[in-house]
Amino acid sequence: MKFAITATDRYLGVFEAFVEAGWTPLKLFTIQAKDALSSHSAVVRYAEQNNAAVQISRMSAFDLAELQRLGCEVLIVASYPWKIQDWRPFLKYAVNFHPSPLPVGRGPYPIVRAIMEHWDTWAVTCHQLTDQLDSGDILAAKKFTLQPDECHESIDLKTQIAAKRLATEIADNFMPLWEQARPQETGEYWKKPTVEERVINFQLPVEQIMLQIRAYGANGTFALIDNIWLNVKRAVGWIEQHQDVPSLVVHNGNRSIVVAASDGYIGLIDYAPITEND
Image (cartoon, rainbow, N blue to C red; front, side):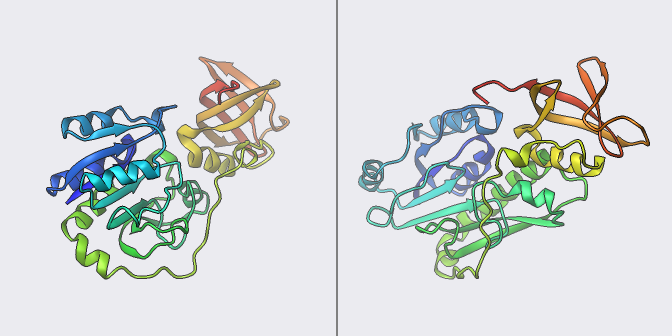
């Protein structure tokens, strides 16, 4: 089948799965890279190797009409920041790969809450693309286990692997899965985390602070240290009785900063001052 896909490097595996199943890629829609999480160099290179066109600007009705002219049958959506307008006048099928066990976890970035709420299993779900965000009938899902010490990077990597495995199943059995897709039950929409939710409160216990830092990982949490806001991507923490005031810097060394928490200390290992572009 001829298809177009939206993806960044994180979902390269989905792209590969459909090509490896014998599908013909016509076009890749991706985004301007801002950081490692939105990198698209690998997925662009893969598109070019498979003679697929590449577009970084937002998909329009004109683009959908052009896909129709080229004989495109399916639009595969994986990691795309823009809402896609009605595809039905132009294409036969469209599906979305969503990183949650739908109908729970609808929304732009659910894996943070998966960690914060101590989920022990998670999933990637493939569903029919509809006007209602992440609410279309489900073709299939791929579950995987989460560990108690899960972090943003580990669950993200597990999600990428599960997405490719799921995409392989979808590519090999697309029509039966499409025709047998099951409606979603009443679900939960999870909003994108706010800036305030990413701020570290050093009045809290070490375990709770470290959970927050693990959940945001490379996206970073925010810490106010000596009147300077830092984007914290990695830290260590330990419980220890002390008389230090929470949020007090008790040690500097080797670019690491140790800050007092309510029942111990947090060592900031990987951080950078926040700029206007963050």
